[in-house]
Amino acid sequence: MQCSHAGLTGIRLSHDDSPSPAVTASLIALRDRLNSKFPKGLTDCVLGYRTLTVFFDPAELSRETLLGAISDLDGKLDVASNNSEYSSRTIELPVWYAEESGQDLSTVAKRSGLSVAAVIELHSSTAYNAYATGFAPGFCYLGEVSEQLEMPRLGTPRRAVPPGSVAIADRQTAVYPSRSPGGWHLLGRCPLPLFDLEQTPPGLISVGDQVSFKPISRDEFLSMGGRL
Image (tube, rainbow, N blue to C red; front, side, top):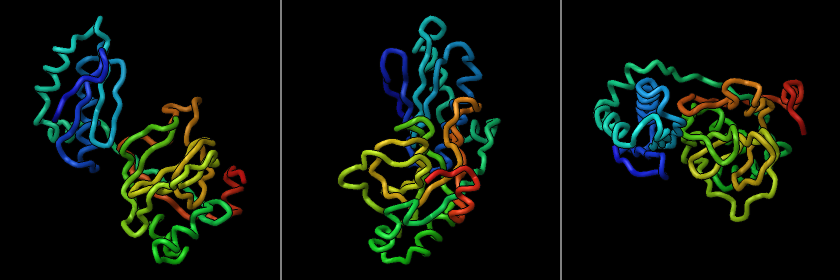
């Protein structure tokens, strides 16, 4: 575990291993242990693919004390993970895969040498790990997409991607929670809201969750509240 400064009141912890569900579980366990040890001193904890950035209140907790606690837990992440109260959830998202809802579906099929049906089957038959959130509220990076569907980002991002759009880029997939610019390849659309401030937590997907996609029809998409 490598430590570095993240501003005046932050510490970034970088896991030595490559991103994986096990690394995510270890970082979540470490986050939970630190939050339990310093209930007043920590102001925020942000999880990444293989990082945990911890922010603290200097009036309640010194950097030295926090670093000492981190050092004490380093090397015990597997133990912390096994004893963490965190339990990952399995989330199934309905998706209407079609050229009308995912304008890059045919392009992805052509570039991958697959049929449209095979692209849908590959994308929807994989369970994805939620590695990080960012870019926009409720946007969660999921991996890993099958090598057969690996696609570089668009050379020129779109100015506006419809909310609920399911997309891929490189070995990642995601759902756009709101209308926003985007440079990923669009495969379809999900009718469920991904971010709602009236809910706790407001994001439907959290880091560490397992996410899968279920193909639905156009009529099902509309009946679930989806909008064209």
